[in-house]
Length: 291
Length: 279
Image 1: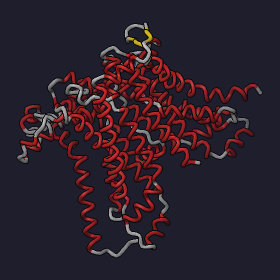
Image 2: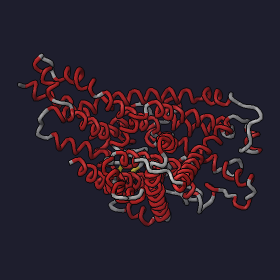
Image 3: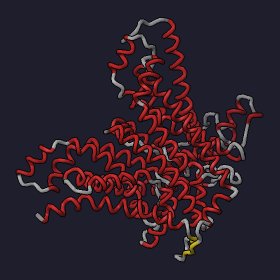
Image 4: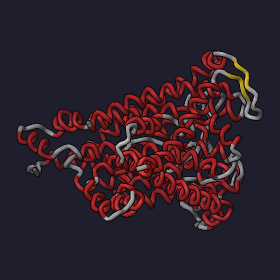
């Protein structure tokens, strides 16, 4: 009977240990680090209490970062989730017919490209001298609308946000299309018999039945907005000045450029608090749908 | 449920298609512009980046490939293959262990592992850096493979577990009578039946591993082991103002996942919609 007792652990332990060692322990350690002053070159640590958090919250850049992350979050919710869902409804409508699959795939493809490739690509598009945007404006005679885009203090973060909408709206559209396809056909047919028009059907049947997926999409968008890093790193590196700075990049720069790992850990705790709250809501929602 | 085609619906239909085609343009136009300029000389690109190339510079692609992209590709393939193999093996073991034995703690372990899905890579970055350094793994390919495996297990286990639950127990009972042990049943019954869901898991995880940047950027230092997303950034520094070659590089780097999606749409969509996580 001994063999039977060991067998389950043989299957479970490798996975469990991997997750504990490389996901849970680092995150716990990060919370500990946030109360210490430490450097990447030595192993010495000095307890500093809440001083890292104090320095984070009173930092001049802090309001800029929070503002940028929130801009990213709100615009993404409106464009990716809001417009993306409307787009999914349009693609599923009878008027579009068989071409819907083609449109859906084209819209989805940008999300398969790596963030750095898209970042570099848009650095070219926004480039003041050779970029697509300024060249286009020149060719149609709107020279006075030309901008330095990523080099502009006010515009930079919005240029990055626009790039993300280009890349990820189709992703949300795809998720919503699948959710709408799962709506039972007889519900829709019954509604047609009752005389409901296409807009009425979308609002009263499709959206309520896909509300769980809609919430999941909203939450992954919120989490994505506060994890934001590569998009900014590969285009502006937070500049000009710190005008397009975001939490994720601030963490990285403090840890590996300014050698202030305690501050980085404190920023990590803040990101952790925001994303975990959102994730808990998501897990609740997805699990409640299964039971 | 086709309705009578009135002129009003015909007009609506045309307007809708025009709108959708316009959106196709929004997606495709920047990419086309990139392709166009990747086939020019730098001088021509500076003159007017919207004009057609006078001389088609297909050699830009060869230059990009030979100037390092080839090595980054090789590294990405290696890292992806090793990561995928272990992600799938360890996660299916875990899902099997959780569904086939009546362990007292299996529900607790399931929730614990699943909770890993809620934790973001940024938060683990600094401690992982320290841990990998003390394990002497920093700046080796294992420095990214191990975190990739660990961070993808929760999602993969979640997908596999719900599939394994749906596999009827009778299939295995016959094998038990024949004297198969649990490992034999796992490899001869469970794995073959689960091929479709394993394919979905593989492709979604590949998309993550292939494009991952944050960990790779921090844990790898030597150019000789960099993966493609990181290599592209290094490439930008190496090429300085050779823009057209850079553009060719961006396009080459983006192609594999797009091709894979076009070939394996079904698995892709299923994997993505069952465990929606971004990035």
